[in-house]
Structures are given as C-alpha cells and as structure tokens.
Image (cartoon, rainbow, N blue to C red; front, side):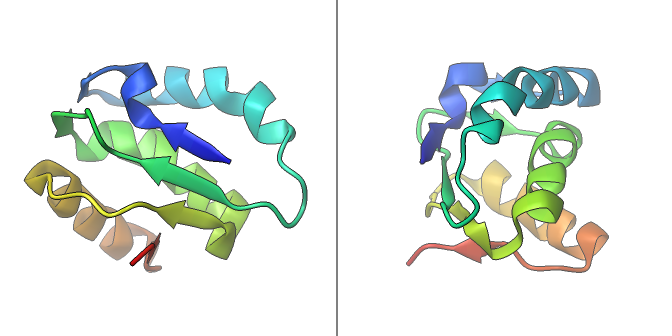
Length: 97
C-alpha cells in the first residue's frame, strides 16, 4: 500500500496534528495484511516537522518495522526530520532506493 503524506497537508507541523493524522489513518492501517508493506510518499509535502513525524511515523515504525518503506525525497526538511527520528528511535528507517 502506498500513502501520500500530502493528503494530510503540505505543511505537516505540530505533535497534535501528527497524532490526529495517525488516528485518522488507523482504519486504513488495519486493512494491511500481515506481510504487506506500507510505502510513505513525501512528494507534495513542503515541511515535515520532527514533532508531527514523531507522532505519525514513529508508531508506524514500531508497528510495522521493516514493512514500513519510505520513498526517496529531495526535501531537506524530510531528510533532517528522519535523521532526528532515527536517533530518537535508535532504529533506521528503510528507504527505497
């Protein structure tokens, strides 16, 4: 399954909004089969803050592990945020090459 993060907005800021987005995504997440991957597409996102991403991506990383696949992005805020989250979670994200 592929998820366009842009559906939650172009500027993804604040812990509260990230948590709300994660809750809104739960019904879709439950539809994933046990072996299905979830690809996250950052295209169309202008700003991704560490707080929003921590509320949305960190729980996905813990739930899905290697089944969470991040698609490549040339957005500097995405790169910086992912580096921070990898340090916090002490676990790298799997990025599709």
